[in-house]
Amino acid sequence: MAAELQAEMAVSTRPSPVQRRRNLDRRIRPDEIAARIRRIDAILPQLRERLDPCCLCPRHCAARRLHGGFGECGLDARLRVASIARHKGEEPPISGSGGAINVFFSGCNLHCLHCQNWPISQKHVGRIRTAEELAEAILGKWRRGAHALGWVTPTPQIIPALEAYRLCLQQGFDLPLVHNGGGYDSVEIIRMLSGIVDFWLPDAKTADPRRGQAINGVADYPDRNLQAIEEMVCLIQTGHARAVIVRHLVLPDGLEDSERLLERLWNQFRDRIHISLMMQYFPTFRTEDHPSLGRRLNADEYESVVSYARELGFAHGWVQNQEEEDGIPLHCL
Image (tube, rainbow, N blue to C red):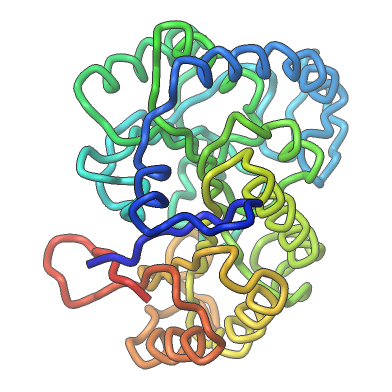
């Protein structure tokens, strides 16, 4: 059985495991729907001010996106979506029994050499849509049953994403919202999304600035990543979100970096976060002939990282099992 996700709240008495589970599984109440609509109305003008020149993410590329300019993410002001699909392979609190409606937004503010979704993130595969079209597609899948709504790399397109989400809320949409990103986000933008996002699902890719520059395209990734996760955890503690699940993709020849990253996360957050250790790496995009990333991860490397996470004290989270024939299911840490 998967470990139950425990959202630490700023209360004097910790809720029981049953209460925690109910909090994580529950749908959005009508009063919360109304509050989210008001919150979106309040922040959209502020976000639009940050679109041109663009400063929505830590890159602050200053692209004139409302005037046809393209940001570091490869996007202008139009909404571009690669796919809208129901996915059952996410962490258990997100997938539930009905799966998550995942909206894969095109583009990304990172340029990872090994990106496993590179046609979407780097080549911007996708269709131009309106917020109304996106909302209609989400509502259609909601009516057929799902457990959550997930945004995948939403930061560069957070404005039309929120516009579409608002339209869904107006129709009574009551699924919890998951913000699934690369972990390179602005603290200010995270703070704006307080009370709108239920589950924060950031990556934590590296603790080494040199690897951040060489592999992900930004040398300040480790510090920005830690700051972003800290703000997400603050939202949990103040009751403005439900949980933070930090994903780490273990890379070949990356044991030292993975251990250093886990140490940083444990020292700063302890069990206020949950860890999801992923092992599905394979060479793709610009890593097929890479000296260290040009091969698959082996089981010993992955198990070493899992063992180190346990030694540090991580008890809440998930690891993967490569021996399963149907996908790579998650098991408790």
